Image 1 (tube, rainbow, N blue to C red):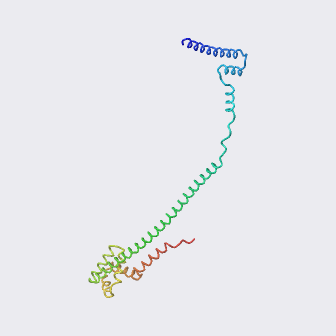
Image 2 (cartoon, rainbow, N blue to C red):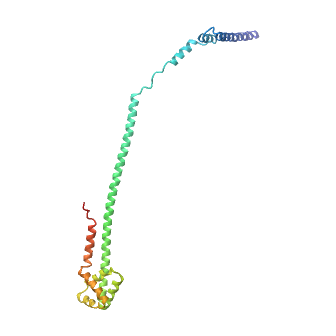
Image 3 (spheres, helix red, strand yellow):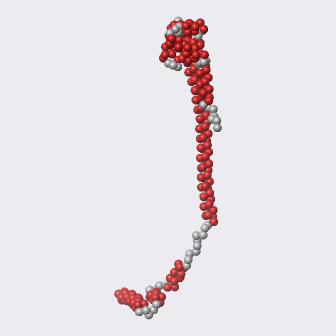
Length: 232
């Protein structure tokens, strides 16, 4: 048994020595330029048991240019174009939807503005009538009060009104115009001093001019003139 192991070991050593000797011999041949590089590689391939032909075939296959597999696929091109067109359609649809929404908002805004203007006009008209009604009622009540007191006291109250506020002239004129003629004559007769006569002259002048009706008409005309278009 020991002899077999010894023989196997000796054989192994012999093989290794043979391979080393062949390698050294090939190296010497290459170093002394006795063989070219290709022959030296062939010798080494034989020594080390390498299939040189198989390696050469493999290298030839690897060195061959690869076929152009990057030719465009027609279906891929069609799909890519379809995706681009679909994305464009989505964008166009989004823009159209946005435009429609804006138009709807503008229409709603215009309708809300119209309703607001209508409501404001109605409110202003009701407020105007309410103010006029309150003012008319107050003037009528003041007129009745002055008719109930004596003429001298009524004249004094009118003078106080005229001295307190310049705008009271219209109220005094309205009160005098609404009184019965006999009561009006008695009150007018009480304006005796120079100052009172001057105030009376102003009152009568306002009555001659048609105040307050003429003033209201003039104010209305002035407001209408503001809306007339400018001449080109």
